[in-house]
Amino acid sequence: MNVISTRGAEAVPLSAAITTGQAPDGGLYMPQSIAMQDGPWGSSLPERTTNALQPFFAGDTLAPHLAAIVAESLSFEAPTRWLNDDTALLELFWGPTAAFKDFGARFLASCLTRLFEPAANHTVLVATSGDTGAAVAAAFHRKPGIRVAVLYPDGRVSPRQAHQLGAFGDNVATYRVAGTFDDCQRLVKAAFSDEALTKQHGLVSANSISLGRLLPQMSYYVNASLTAEAQGRQANFVIPTGNLGNAFACLLTRESGLPIGKVVLASNENRVLPDFLASGKYEPRASIATLANAMDVGAPSNLERLRHHFSNPADIVRADWVSDEDIRATIQSTFTHTGEIVCPHTACGLAVRERLRSAGEGGDWIVAATAHAAKFAEVVEPLVGQPVAVPPALQELLDRATHAEPLAPTLDALSAALAAD
Image 1 (cartoon, rainbow, N blue to C red):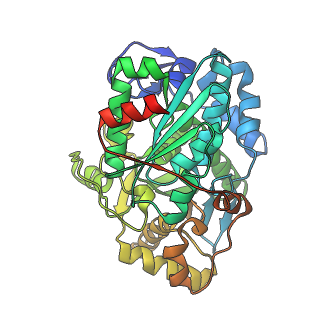
Image 2: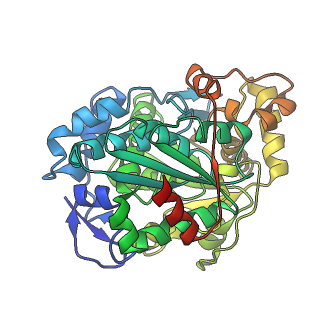
Image 3: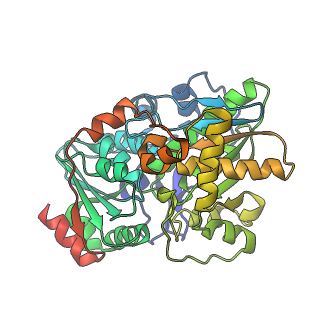
């Protein structure tokens, strides 16, 4: 299958889009068409993912390798656990960096190691609001011929996220940018728009603009919706989101014919997406710091895909936003009533789910639990009154030394850092 740019550039093969990340006209790549599928799906997460992604990879250089790529990258589960009769958590934090970003990052790494020549040198450049950078660093750590440059907003990620981001070393360089996530994202876009810089360092995108990260995020929506159907349920999803990639993957999954009902987005106080869907006007703004820091995005990249693909996005998806006060209250009430300890981002989703219940909206709802609460211990532990157990993979990273270089939010500073590394 070929893919097209949201801004009209010539169609290219999927593998070409995965290696370049962004289209040459500055647009985002999209599948040229979405094939309706009806199975057979298989029974495991890897089987179902391979079958669901086959139409997107049909005829591509990577098609013969798809099953192996999936097996390599999705070596952990994404279980759905029901908290009560009509609400479940889709646990997406059992990968090596305890966040849903592991699914897409590992898949992208498996694709690129097959597409790049062994002797070639490439730099994976990524901006992160907290979780993406660690997932990408882990996925590409010590991959031959590939180095990683991670940019994160200094002081605007959790302490454990910051420790993770700087804990890799070797071929991974981490930079703490004096600014917001939007500044980091702007720097990455500027770097890719600079042809000389891109060529000099063989720049490759690993942000959510990459189809190599977006498509594998369909995996857990495929699996969760089919599992729910086998239980006599139709899956409706509430998805915490900042840059819209995770949520857009769910919309693609539904459009591909999977048994998914309603999709509702949960934002924090960076309410650009809810405001856009309510008014039809896109008004990006400076991001503000919240407890759900990985969603502190004021200019969501994947909104371009949503606006390009759907003539009236408000007919396709809804959105609501949650304050820090609501996040705290939801973490406490969830622990009190279910014994579950959730991260601030998952709490955004649960708060929106409870609003749906209060509004009389029935059905079975699955909330995407995007990260493990242990990554946000300084927020969560005082609210639940007890320590949060740290998953072994996360503990291994926290036991390492960590280092990040300071970086001014300018392209000149980034260019100098890349040249010096």
